Image (cartoon, rainbow, N blue to C red):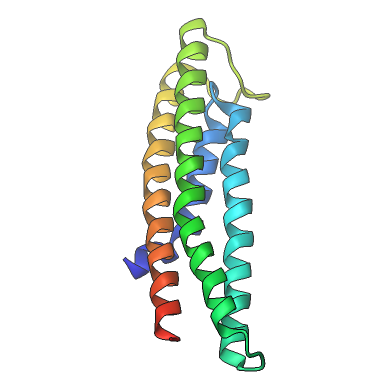
Length: 150
């Protein structure tokens, strides 16, 4: 699980690429970029707090540990919310656009958008599930690491 949680960048890049290349979802792939932005900021913040705990310069270890535990819980909640948003938006837009043959992307690079949209949607959903699992694993690792400092 530890190795799987380190691969979250790869899952997010491939999932975002598949969402943006899908002709029927297209611009709505920005939700993947939003998730990547929020989670990278959260992980940088948690890493900074771990460095403060390791340096032993401050006496507020209990407060910092609680903040890290809350952020560990956020690594479960935020990806779950984004997963549901991506699932709902992707499925809804895909069903509406696919039925009416409306290309939602500002570009049209595929010669056969019908087939490529289904392939891109399947790839995106597989990597969204893998991304959700890796974020949950990352949250478990954060919570275990905080417990080691007690």
